Length: 169
Image (cartoon, rainbow, N blue to C red):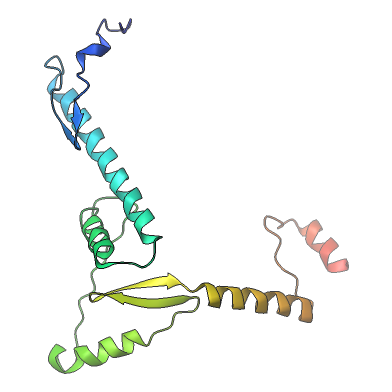
């Protein structure tokens, strides 16, 4: 198959150019900047595939130590990615970590963020959406709206005439 624009053959690229996530047998006709572009593209594709695998793994239950390690390694290798924000917060204790770290860990375990459940696997903590809490708060919210005649916000209805009509009803 001939590429009319530059006269190259598609068959120039061997079918085994991509094997097991690495590049082999790139055509010698590629210039250095072209090779670098191919390497960067493949590297980005591999990262995106790993990102998808991590995302899928986080939606499976139970979260295993293997999944936690996969996530930790992926996050650590994603420091330069715009969608991955890492902020290390060094813990400093007034009485030193020997005296305070255990108390801090115990208090941390007792945290209950609204709508979430704190879980631990091998010393790593993560939040899970608490579906029981979410369903309860949704039913309470709809009860409050019906019981107290609270108007629920209508998305994209900032027009003052529409607000007047709602207020008149």
